[in-house]
Every structure is written in structure tokens, then in C-alpha cells.
Length: 398
Image 1 (tube, rainbow, N blue to C red):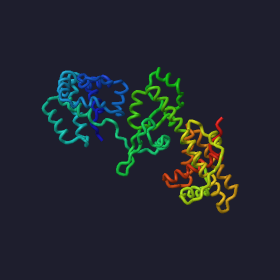
Image 2: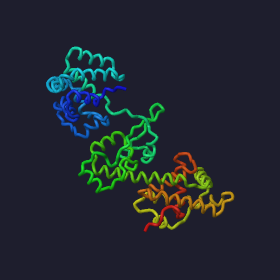
Image 3: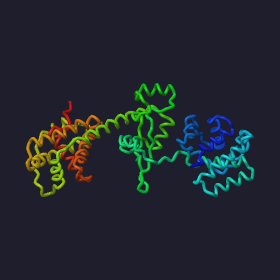
Image 4: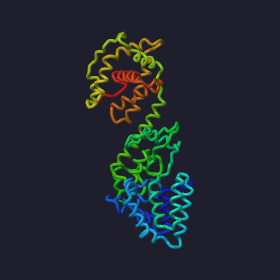
């Protein structure tokens, strides 16, 4: 489908002016930028991405293009500067191509098409070219690629379907349809200068194959555009480390999803869920050093929470295990070993004990298909605290 975009406009004017893509773009945008109070950066990379329809025209330029004073100056500029630069033998070709472009774009209103047609019919070529330019730069330029690709799902899963830089959702539901709000972005970007390449590599060695998924990360459209236009070392380092963490976390999730948890633990969770004021619970007396030796002092809230859960519920849970029909110490050891294996799988991918605690609790709920409610979350957390006291979760701090 024909689309009347600033990218298409520049390509048509480039053919008529017989000049480079960069020069033509700068000449055209000077019709506005020369009369703006603020300077706008037009780097070669931005121009290339504008032509490739990877970026939009800056909002400052769009806003300035609506100023009547700048519009009047731009029309004079097109008459005096742009029009004379077009090859006399090609001016009709340029106008014809522009006419075909907006005429065949179904998104251009008929009134706008009529206005442009009337300008061309009046032989006011400079104003016609200017109005086409002004209209094109205010329209969407980026490809409207909204289709969610199956191949992108692993990369989206790595970042939990949220932009790792700004936490905005990467998928949006519109009328029961999933619409992509992301771009799969190269962590070690293309088009780096030799100095930039040396600097980036000195800080984080990129993967061998830069077109592989190991060099890709899912970012929201805005963060992706900002990063690719002007990649900086601290952003590269952050994305590189995020990718490494995301890969480890995703691999961990795949591994723990294959771990089994005995069905008997469901009885424990449900019993904790059903606790009320009439439930007989005896406090558990323990040496507080046991918890202190396993949880870092910086994790004050976690240590306090685990200690509280253990003191209140450890004996209760132990009693529940013993009351299970046909339950033996060996069955308890199987469950304990499964929790221990889950811990050994999860904790290397976590940056803190709080994160490890949360992920083990979530794993228990997923294994048992427990409803996602706050009360069940607390019950699952209590079970994790039980296994911390029982030494399956967290090793002694050395």
C-alpha cells in the first residue's frame, strides 16, 4: 500500500535534486530548522533511520511546523532554495510522483488531497512542494508493524514481557488482540565508530555472532529508538548485564518447571490457608542464631519475616506432615530434597536472598497450581520459611 511519509517524500525529492540522501534531508528540514529558536540534531545516523522508517521526526520540528510565521518563511524558502535545486527536466516527474503517492494513500483525507491538487493546478510549485513536505513530516513515519512474532516470544519471556529499561509493557491488548509495543534490539549495535567499538568491547565482550539471539533484547519502542540512535557505554553495559541475567533467569525457569513437588505439600498449604483463631498452634522455641546465620543482616525485613513464621508455624507444619495418611519420614525427605534442588537451581540466578525466597515461593505455587491470592502467597511463604529453618533453603553465611 502506498504511504505518504516523510521517508517517501525525501526519496522523491532526492531523485529530482540528484543529490545525496543526507544533503537533501538537511536542505529540506532547513525550511523549518533555520527559523527555530532551538537547534535540532540531525546526525547521519538519524537521517539514515528516518529514511528507513525506524524513527519519527522530532516533536520540536512538528510543533514548529504548525507556527504560521514559520510556515510563511518555509514557503519562501521552498520558492527560493528548494525549487531551484530540482533538475528542470525532472520537476514534472517529482510532482507526478508526489501526486501518485498521496492519491493512493487511503489514510490521506480527500480534503487534503483536493487542497494539494489545487495548489499543483495553480502552478504554484514551490508552495505545493512545501505543503506536501509539511504534511508528510507530521504524519507517522515508522512502520506500523504490530504483528506479534512467535520467534520473539523467548526474548519477551526473558524480560518478563516488560521493557528492562523503563518497565513499560511490551505487549498491549487492544480489542482482544495482542499488539506489539516493542522492538527486538541489538545490544552491541551496528554502525558504531571504531573508537566506540573498542570502548564497548573493553567493558563487555560481545557474543561472537552479533545477529544471533544472544545479542538481542526486547525493549519498548521508545527505549530501542533512543539507544540505537545514540548508544552510550553505560546503557550498553546495563543491557549486556540485563541480558546475561535474563538468560540465566529464563534457563532457571525452564529447569525448575521440570522439577516435581510431591502432592502431599498441597495438604500443608491448604491447612495453612484455613488457619483461624480456633486453630491450635504452639510456638516453636529455637536458637535465633540459626536464622541469623542463614540470612544476611542487610535483609532485615526478610530475616524478621522468616523468624516470625518459623516461631509461629514450624511445629504446626511438622505436625501436619506427621498426620498425613500413609506418610513416612522417607516421604518427607523426598519433599525436602525437591525443595533443596529447587533452591540450588534458583539461587545462582538471583541477586539477593529476597529474590530467591520469592522465586521459591512462586515455584511452589506454580507446581501445585495454587490460586494466585494474597492468602495463598502467605501460606507458600510460610512453607519456604519452614524449609529455611530445616536447612533446605539458604546455606550458612560464611
